[in-house]
Every structure is written in structure tokens, then in C-alpha cells.
Length: 473
Image (cartoon, rainbow, N blue to C red; front, side, top):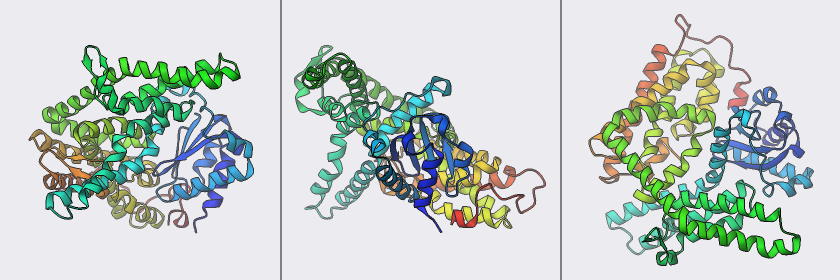
């Protein structure tokens, strides 16, 4: 039987104790800890803990413990409760201190991507909820149903996206050690209607120009300015001048530089994504669908959120997410092949049965860490299935039928309510369903044919380490 209190206690103990934890958060499947001393983590014991599906970022201050959907919410809440109850001093630090810098020896680029991902991960629930409401509202509007309700739904669904720059600025300052409200204040300049009266580089600015990329850059600059001021001003002056200088300097830089530059980058992203699909459709789908599982395995997939969000701001949907979602479908097909082939391994089959519903809904980590990655070859053949599904969707993009998602977060079957495209939702849903079926079938066939060493019996040698039916049920 699952014991989330015991899991939380064990995770804290194996990551150096409450005093070593500086910040706690979580995403759909992972408990994310910012640590003061990464060397204090007992990596081997943590990976072997019942209920832990995987560990990412070992040896760095940004540690991710993969627990799976549903479990991660309750374990995170229990970790926070234990920190608050047993370490008041630590609790006072959490969320207010800047996370320790990532050691360059461990890879500065992946560390930077993880920190950018940390900015956007807390926004995913709102993106999902508002995206689904936008999809429902679109269906009601097209059908002519409930005309008195659709304006209200449109306002509810669109309000968050209209102000997303403010939330990005707040989260950026929080993640990088600044005052969150100052980051939000500077980023708010981007969406303020009055910027239309400001001229930069000979043209009038537009409210929202630069979007989330501009907000990210503005808040990063504000954080740097704030830290510079706080190190040079005495307490009495710091209270008055630091926030004023931070907002003024960063705000002017945003208006007369960052908004224009970020707008150009955002336009290039949209143009590039459209060109990639309309020019190299199947090839782009093969690459994106085939390589996404390794990104998920490394915990770097969330770094794509700014790109998805930029596309949604520009076009109303992201054309990349349906392609990337094929990776999870390929893994579902591969897991089904393992289930069929190794029919006498009851432990592994129990793991697959418990992880498959999440996999069908686009949450891939339980299958990655519980099945395909430990077995080795099925992970590769799952990528082949994802590539095939991506190629299917990309082929239709080459024909002019784009498939996009109005929000980010879910994939698999959970993405159906969010689908639309340049020809409307019905063709997009049909193409996406065809891609899923292709990925399932190819992942299944490739795993049956190549996912096991030659001569492997229809049972597996030893069970996967640290997995028992009780752990995976």
C-alpha cells in the first residue's frame, strides 16, 4: 500500500535532510528540489526507494525525483509539511533565496534550460485549464449553442493568456533570486496598452510585443539590477531606491530594446516552425517525434514551453506539440509489446498495467523509468514508433493541413480537446488520431522485432531493480 508520508520522509533523508533543501516545487510527475549541497544526496539509495521511478540532475543543485502523476502532488505536499514542521529556518528560506548556481562542470547549458523550465512549469495548470475552456468555447461558438455563455467563456479562457507576461516575469524573478513582484511589474510593461504611444527604432510598439520571451528577458534584467543595487545601498536607501531603480532602468530597457528584439525572435520562431513543417514536413516529424523521449528522460522537455507559448500567442496554437506527443504514443506501443512478449514476468506486467493509463494520457515518465529505459532496447524502439507517428502528422503538414494545440501540458488522448489547425478542429483531430495509431503500431512492431536480444525467452531474466507489484500498483 502506498505511503506518501514515508516516501516524503525518505526522500528528505536521502537528499541531505531538511536543512539541505532550499526550494520545493513539482510538475506533473516530478518532485523538484533545489539543494544547498548536491554532494549530500545518496543517489543510489534514492533511486532504489520504492515508488521512485527515476532521478534526474544528480550532482547538481536542481534535483528532480520522478514519482508519477497523482503521487507527486501528495508527496510534495508532505515534503513541504515536514519542512515547515521540523525546520522553521529552512522554511523561511524556501522560495526567498536564490537557488545555488549550477556547477559548470556538470553542464551549464542543461542547468540553464532546467531553470528556464522552472519558470514555466508552475504555469502549466492554468495553460491547460484555459486551453480546454478555449476549445470548448470554440465548439460552442461554431455550433451556435449557448450564445449567452460563450462571451463569458471567452473572457475566462483568454484572460490568463492576455496577462501571461506578468506571470512569467513574476516566476522568473522568483527562480533567479529577485523579488517576484518586481519581475512582474517590469514584465507588465509589455502588455500595458499605453506602450502603443512609445516609438522604438522608428516604429510604434504594440501591446504584447515580444510576449513571454520579452517578459523573461525583462525580468532577468530586473533581477540583475536589483541584486546590483542591494549590494551597494544602505538599508534606509535600499527600501526606496532599489525598487525604483529596478523598475525604471529595466522598464526603459524593455521599452527601447527588449520588446523589439524579443518580438523579432518570436516572429522568427513562428516563421521557422511554419517553414519547417510546410517544407520538410515528414522529415521534421520524424526528428521531433523520435528525439522527444530522450529530452523527457533528461528532464529538458519543459524548456520547450517558451517556444510553445510563443506560437500560441502568435497563431492561436502550437504546431510542435502534436508532433512531440507522438513520442509518448510510440512508447505505449513498445510497452504493449513488452507486455505481450514477456508474459511470464508478472512484476514487469504489473508495472506496465499501472503505468499504461498515464502513458495513454501523455504522461510518459512511469513507462520510461519503469519499463523501457531499464530494458534498454525497448526505449530505442519506442523512439522509432514516435518518429513514425511524427512523420505521419508532418506529412499532412506538407500537404497544407496543420495540426496544433491551443494549450500545452497534456498529450496522448488528453490532447484531443485542445486540437485545432488551419482547417479547423475536425481535420486536426483525424490527423492526430492517425498519428497516434501509427506510433502505437510501429512502436509495438519495432519492439517485438528488435526490442529483445536474439533468443530471449518469453519471460524476462531477473525482475527490474527496486520494483515489486506492491510498489507499482
